[in-house]
Image 1 (cartoon, rainbow, N blue to C red):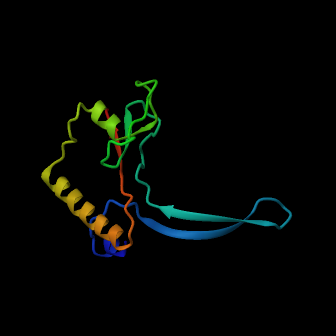
Image 2: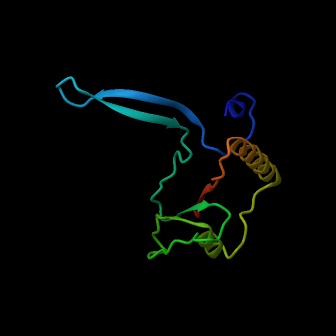
Length: 132
């Protein structure tokens, strides 16, 4: 993660800015409650997660049990899965310019190398598409 910040090494992993242990006094009785907080970058700054024009997908690259039944398709705020993405987009990929595509390829390569070193295999993309 330091390489991502210091050397501008592309990564699509959410960056953790810090982890904190806070002791918070909720009442006037001087008893404190421990809170554990992880501060991460805000990836949806300025976006309304409940907008009817927004489609959210959690993509893993698998079709096995990767479908969510959506009752109200016009006002869906549910995060859908891989098969929903293919269905909603008529199996068409998301178009992006060459530079962005190459940057994503490098980020995926860097991330999978990082995760494999620590024997972690769970990797997915959270994709938000604003239809406006």
